[in-house]
Amino acid sequence: MNGQIFPLIAATVALTFLLTVRDNARGESYHRGIVEYEVACMPCHGIDGRGDGRLAKTLKTPPADLTQIARSNKGAFPSARISEVIDGRAIVAAHGQRAMPIWGDRYSVAIPGEDPAMVEKRVRAQIDALIDYLKSIQE
Image 1 (cartoon, helix red, strand yellow):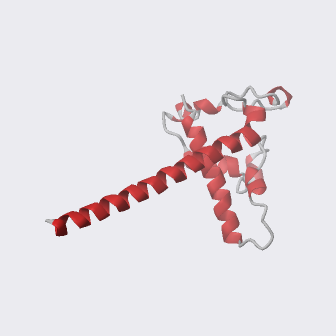
Image 2 (cartoon, rainbow, N blue to C red):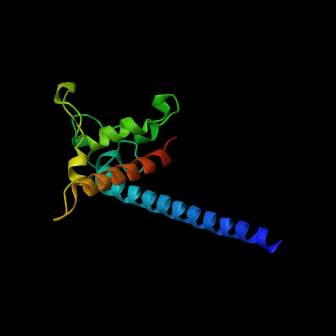
């Protein structure tokens, strides 16, 4: 019987460890998303994401109500599209002028000696964290 219990205990410990790592990573990503929202988005989109930030009235195009993204997409949050909008590096000029800053450029400032692949990984992680936060404020 002891021979059967040990693999079960080992599997349970391993699963608990993996779930803890996953949950910590999610928590860290969520926290990073909140901080990034406060720094980069809140001035225009406001505390609650409704487009009523302190700079909103100074803009030609009113900021979007970020709490309504899923609702305006039939209940589905379009993560890939929102990622493209936040990143902004791949948006073609022929599609018109951007009212929002290109955050992908800001996120991709390399630390001296940093591998370009790591820079892009960091950019993706930052944008993903912000998207995780935006998903959490959907109404």
